[in-house]
Length: 79
Image 1: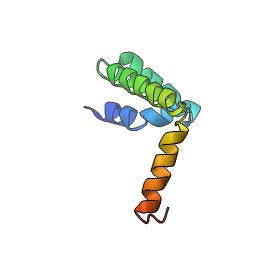
Image 2: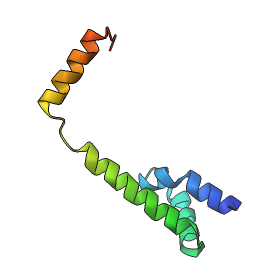
Image 3: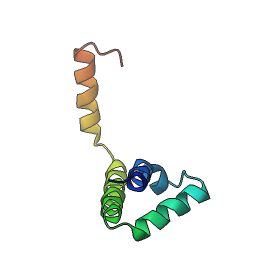
């Protein structure tokens, strides 16, 4: 992996989250267009981020919350 690839992959999550400056976003976008390997990594990370987001939206059933609270109380958790 060359320096440009390393830099692009190091910033992939801030890029996906829209946290980079326009200049840095443009540099990464340009790199993704010309690189042979990095678009596959970007696609994977993008899909992974979407799956995590989708799963985080699910509600935890009340009985699971109750069991967890009982477990924590029974094990003297300082939570």
